[in-house]
Image: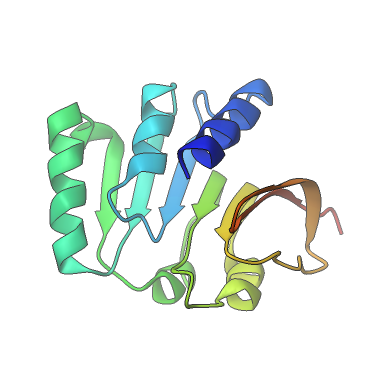
Length: 149
């Protein structure tokens, strides 16, 4: 996964998609994706994480790194949050491998760019255009942009 994350950030940075961007980190976990974005110049990150135990770790990581003023932690299930989510520049979605929320996610996310991480190759819906795909072992990473209709 470290190699995959390094590749993701190299790609995002080379495409100029992080600096001054508003980021949405779905299934945030410890917040490593969003926190890395902040360290690379993102304007703000909204973390969505439903687990109280995991949010405690996330909150501690945010505080330790001093990003409190640039972050918001939302204690909801991703699907519930997306029902009224604001438009953002970049979304990172890394749902638990046992789940397949992709049809719902692809229909609900309002962002210029989506980076997805799954255990299988995600089939994009017609409202997304593939920018690139990469595979690292069991990790399938894709970059997509909102399709112009």
